[in-house]
Image 1: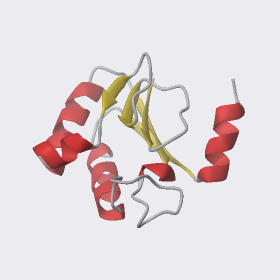
Image 2: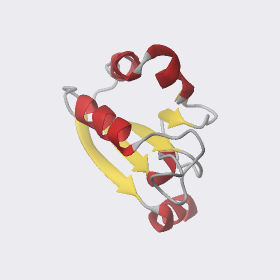
Image 3: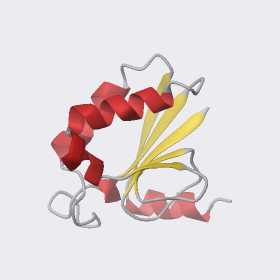
Image 4: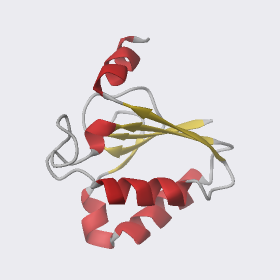
Length: 113
């Protein structure tokens, strides 16, 4: 099983990261959405995730732009972009589920070894 993590700050162990880079994880920076368009970005992400038997998606609300979440990041995703990505990822055969973490829950995940 692979963990696909959408984050703007604070990182939990994972295999694929959308947002900030993490050592040992495949990184998909958000600026690729602007360069390739959100549909192409999602196609690339889904194609990469095909190699895993199952994919668990973890979303930290910090991946959202500050306009949509107080703890968000400058240049983060809009709520529409995040929902689009999640709806597309649900279509993968190996999709296992989504977990959404608020700021407090993210802090708890970071404390867990």
